[in-house]
Image (cartoon, rainbow, N blue to C red):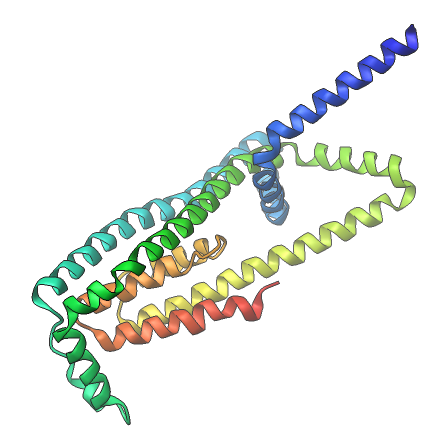
Length: 292
């Protein structure tokens, strides 16, 4: 009877553990990135804790608040900025439908080899704009669905990043105790080599984090250079936004595509083409070269 009761308790505990894992499933990724963020910035946590005379909770709260201001404030600004650009793009499309394209820029005809052909294409599009709009209308729905899917993906990434910043507070506050628990658990499972494997995992995570941050920094610097060359206002803020969104899939284009559209809206087509090419091949291309 005693063995049956013990078996029943074990089954109930396993069921409870499985239910907890099932409930926590949507948050595992955010927990993981919160742990990675806390680990990568742990030296800063140590310095701040020492400066605050060992008050770990206060140090954790200050660092978490700093991450929120550094990450969430630019994202909120970016959201309002993107909304303005969407309105401008919608107005531009309506103006093109009514009035057609503006006259081709004077420099377009001077492009070597293909300048006259580009001007011809420009005039053809201007003259046949309505017919072209009818021909591409069936594809607009597909483009809209694609943009909706990418927007949902980016929104999910931003939400996950926000949850990670919330979780990082608890990793800051309870990090040493969590690390000691993990080490003791590993020592029971694999013995004396537990510290070796723990150091190996820690080193790997540190290198990956450095690679991700390094790639984001490279994209931000290159984007900043492109914004300064193109004369886009607020280039520094846009560069910071590029760095933050580089941590999110398909993030950097959310910065340089609206900037390119703004340049085209102002009639600065040369710089618009430059920034579009710079963003496509230089800023976004860095991810394929430096990706850890």
